[in-house]
Each structure stands twice: as C-alpha cells, then as structure tokens.
Image (cartoon, rainbow, N blue to C red):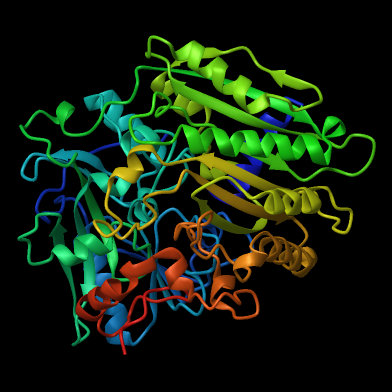
Length: 537
C-alpha cells in the first residue's frame, strides 16, 4: 500500500471510535501480431504527457522526462531501452507508480511506463501463471481466482501493480498462512543491458541448473530499478507437479470473516495506550509461529495522530481470518479479548461479517484513483513487540501538540507464520523470523508544509530507534526494513548514526551477492537510483 491509500483505508476504521484482465497469451517471447514494432513515444509536446506525469501516487514527485515510452510487448521494451542507450539518455522504469521515494523521476530522461502490459494468463509451456508488470493486484486476484480458483499472497491495495510489488518481496493478508509472494516466483523475464550497451530480453528461473538462476534470485526481494526492466513474471508453487492450473498455486479460503475494533482518543491515556500496544505485540509473539491456529489471521492496527480540539478523533484495528475453519468465530473472539484486555475506555466492536473471499478482497481494495496527496513513509520489521520505551515515544509523538498536521499514522501489521519457513538466503528477502511490520507515515496537501512534515517524521523515527542509531538496526526487537517501503534517509549519516549501512537494513548479508548479480547483468549501472544496488568496487 502507499501512504495515501493507507490514509483513505484508515478513514473507515477511524469511524469505529474495470480493466480488461486478460487477452492472448504471450508465450516464449512471441508478440501478438496486431502490436506495432515500436512503443508509443510521448514527448512533453503531446497532450498525453501531463496525464503520464500525474500517474503516480506520491504528489511530492512529478517525473518530467524528455519523453515517456509506453510498450505493450517485451520486444517494444527492448527497442525502447536500445533507443535510449544509443541516444545516451538515462532511462528508468515504472509499473504502478507507487513508491515512497523519487526513484523514477530523479534526473531521468526516458521513463518506460509499463501500465499497458497487463496480461494474466496460464503459460502451458512453462506450466506456470504469467503476469505482466502493469497488471494491478486486484486484476491479478480476480483473474487467477475466477478463472482457476487460485491466488498469490499479495498486498491489500488493488491499485498497486505487480511490477514492483513482486520483485520487492510482496506480502499481504494471506502471507502468514501462505508465505511471501516471492516464494511462488518461478521465472522472470528481464530486459537487461550488456557491457556494450545493447539491450536484450533474458528469462531466468528458479531451476538450480539454469545459467541465469542468479538473475531470478535477484528478483526475489531485490526491489525495482536495479537490474533491468521486468516484462513478465511466472508464478508456481514450489514442488507443485502436474499440468492442472488449479493445483499450481494456492487456493485462498472460500470465506473470510472480519470485524473491526475502535477506540476514541478521548478515552485513551498513556497507560491504556501502553497496555493496548503491549497486548497486540505480545499476542503476535505467542501466535506467529508457522502452523499456528491463527496462521490465517491478519489484523492491521492503525493509529492516527490525536487531533486537537474537542473532537480528538479515533483509531482502530481490522481483523480478518479464514472463515472455513471449524472454530473461526471462537478464535476471532479470543483474539479480540486478548488485545483489548485491561485497556480502559470505550471499545467499539463491529458485528462479525462473512463474505466470499474475492468479495472481501474487493471491499478492502482501493484503486489508484482513490489516492492523492503528499507523504513521507518509513518502516521496520519487528521480531518482538515494541519495547516500553518505544511505546512511550509513539504515544508522545501521536499526542504531541508541537506539530500542526494531524494526518500522521502508526500502522502495525501481522506478519510471520509461513514466511518464516524459508531460509534468509534462499531469496533476497532476508527477514525470515519477524512477526510484525510497522509503518510510519505523515501526509499533507500544502506544498509549503513539506519541510515541517519531513522534519517531524524524521525526529519521530529517530526517537523510536534511539538505542540503535536512529534506524531499526537488527537486534532482538528490530530486523531492518522492507525495500518496498524505501526510505532514503537511511542513506544519510545525519539520520542514520548506527554505523549500519542502509543496504544492511534492507538486504542484510544478501547485499554482496546482489552486487555480484549487478556486475553481471547491469555492468554499466544503467538502472540506478539513490537506493539501488551499487556495482562492487
């Protein structure tokens, strides 16, 4: 999810206190005959240019390249990159336009926009599901489920595109029971640039004897904008056999049960806030092991900043889980009782609802049309609950009166479970013993308020991790951060005084291997940004 999406998603919680999906399959690099050989070129003089500038979610950043290229096939991507190479222009790539930082627009001259590449098909030759990078997660879920009865354990926000989500190590409500999205990545097609400056398409698979295996591995959590332009993903459950598509990816639960719990800031004291966050964190410490009875439970706790005045506002927690379990209702009730135990004040609990799985996904899914505003986000993995000192700091910043912008959010999310059954070096995603993720965001609408908001969230984040140099350096509680929630402040010694380089926060010991992949597949460092993999020296 992006910051604005969370803000919109939260609006409903706080109250407690069309796109074509498929087409002709593209198999083995064969393009549909009706496609032109060259992708559309959109320069600044074209009326469509401004629409493409606006096709992003963080209004802090407006990419204004010399021109956009809009390919519909892999061959068109190859030509677009080759054209940029011959002209000596810097090229970046965009799929959904969701990013915390300015990785696409910073100094770029050509943006390859993949929004027209949206096919989702079953590739019989590779015996895997092919997903193009421009397809939104909602399109992926709908197509996979209605056609074959399967899914991938991706994120909640339907407007996020598969392109960046998958290669960054995507996760979502089903990850505790099914694992990370990248645990299902069978193959990836990437347009890379060799040492001579020539672009070509390469397919890399998870097969150990594949000569391109290292390129596949680099896309299992390496993040976007590092090695080339991903034009296709193929997904299949590891170890799955046979040719029946309905057995080659996991099936989601047929029914989802859900409810919401809300609190009013008027009733919340420092003591009750501390008790709530302790309860939430300690519950996840007890119930996040692989195979837990609660593996299907996903429960974001979204805490908005306390508003000034007579109506301080509220915050809430959403709970959902597999409704087909024989004791699902009892498990859900017990969870709510554990989290709310000994928390003073009025607690509002909504009636439990039961919905078919896809309907439940749609209800919580927002499109890019729902997103707007400027924001800054930061994040971390949690191996255990927040310490009492961290909870005290969170309370101080969420209730302080020294900041005028009320659109700030602390978001705790359920994690762990099956994610933690994979070795840290089997994929690039190394955080394989965490039980929660935490996200910090602040958003605003007045461009003049940017610096004040940036300063505020930077101080908050530094205070939360004061004991580890202002960042979530791995220790008994923290385990770094998630590359799909990039924070360029981690590269700045002013805000990262830990002595731990930014890449160790995101990739840990896998960074050196990523550098080796970079040297082989992008030796000219064509694809780069402020937090990209750096070539080895």
